[in-house]
Amino acid sequence: QILAYFKQTNVAHFRQGFITHLCSVTDGPCEYKGDNMVDIHTGMNIPEKDFNRVVELLINAMDEQQIPQTVQNQILSRLAPLRPEVINI
Image (cartoon, rainbow, N blue to C red):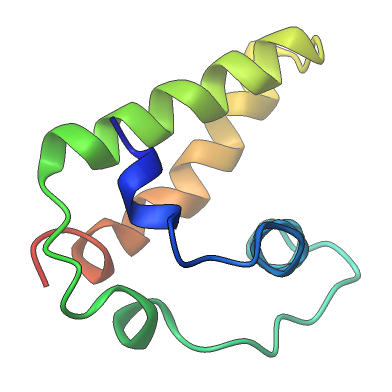
């Protein structure tokens, strides 16, 4: 369902950028220096259902790593404000 968005993507580059961005958003020691979310997602026209699927996959990954629910909620609350910068732009 979401793989189509990544056909032209360098997976290693994406992975590192995602990790660094997540670290930065959660006040970790990382400084994200990549493109902003609007620039990255403009023209992709990502529908809400696909955005929600990525959130589900992130939750599944956090569950697999046994990240406590309270920490998961904190992470998701930090990412939630980015939603308008990703969907339907």
